Each structure stands twice: as structure tokens, then as C-alpha cells.
Length: 255
Image (cartoon, rainbow, N blue to C red; front, side, top):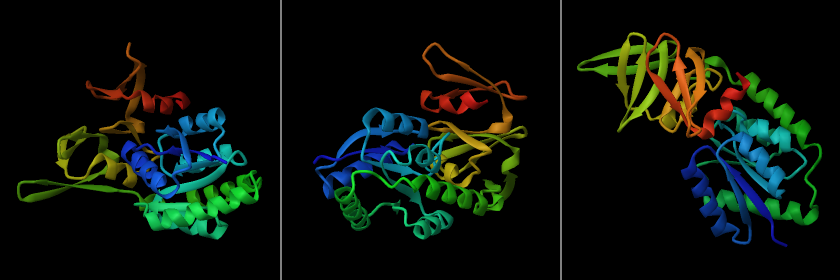
């Protein structure tokens, strides 16, 4: 029997990497869809009815845990996460499959072996998974304290350092090998990448709206849409506007 799977991760490079690894470890597995966010992942489960969903924990909008709660009972779920002690402890306690980034072939092989046994034993995923995900989600949100997130940005100007509170930041924007930090007082450059920042900032306060842009949600005044389908975001007390990629427009449906 041919089994089907979807991969959900907001980083295209990481989706491609996992797909390549799966092709080496389980060549018979058909990857029927790749989702860039949680909303797409839920739709792909409805459209393709896969046997397995590989879900990144941190995605814009719906997180991997949110998606899992919605699709529990529809397919087997494997979480993929950058190391997070709370998440890993929760998964191990509840015996839920997970992969820690960067995914190694050996660890992936262990997960695939378990999945094959489960699928051969029963085509139906466990119905109690919804309850397990609810417990994990509650524990994950409870344990993730505010001070776990990035609080200060250290910038350098000549021979001096300046600390900028993240609360002062309007938005971050990628510039060549650096990232521009925009505040009401001006701008500064840091060496942290947008990718690093999305992992370190509180996702309730900062949203990635473009491959190279992260904005503080409380600074958003309104969002319009261009003729090409992209969003045009206006910030409070600023004259500049920011582009919202189509893949991130779903974030603003809740506003």
C-alpha cells in the first residue's frame, strides 16, 4: 500500500530538506502536499486525506499544535521543532512522535519505523489524540514564560553598544547580511537574521509578514490589499508602508 503525507513548515528550505530526507529513508512515501502555514496544512488534510502530517511547531497564524488539534483523528501526526525543552518534555510524556531540528537520518528512521508499525496495525489514527494535543497545548502555553522570549536587542555603533527594548521596535527588516531595527527614534543594524528573530520573539506580539519583515502587532494601524493580492500594511505614527506577502495575509483575518 502507498502511504501519503503532507509537510507543513513556513521555511521552504526546511520543507525541501525534510522531503529529501524522507525520500531517502522511505522512498515509497508519497508527499502529496507542502504547506507554508497552518491554514494551508488544515486544507491539505481535507483535500488529500494523507496518512501522516509532519507539522512544524512554530508557524504563522495557526501553530503546529493548533493544526494538530483540528486534524486529530484524521491522520498520524509527527511534530517537527527546533529544540524547545517544554515541547520535547511534553511530547515524551504523552508519547507523541516528534523530530528535533536539524532532523538527522537516524532519528527520522526511528520515527518512520514506528509509523510503519502503527499504520500496519491500524489504518485509523488514535481518536484520543485530540485530548492529548489539548493537554500538550495547555502545558506548552503555560510553561512558555514571557521572559523566555527576546527582551533586548543589542546594537553596536562604532565603539559603543546600545540596548533597545523589543517593546520599542516597530518592525525588523532584512538588509543584505544584516537586519534593520526600526523604532520611533530611528534605526539600527544587527547581525541577527529574520529567521533567528522569529524563533526568539514572542509570536503573540511579533508577526512575520514577509520573508524579510517582522512587525510588532500593536503598531499596526490597518492593512489593505494591492491589485496583485499582496497586503499593504500601515503602521501607527509612521509614514512608511510595508508589504505583506500573500502567504501571510491570513494573519489579518482575525483582526
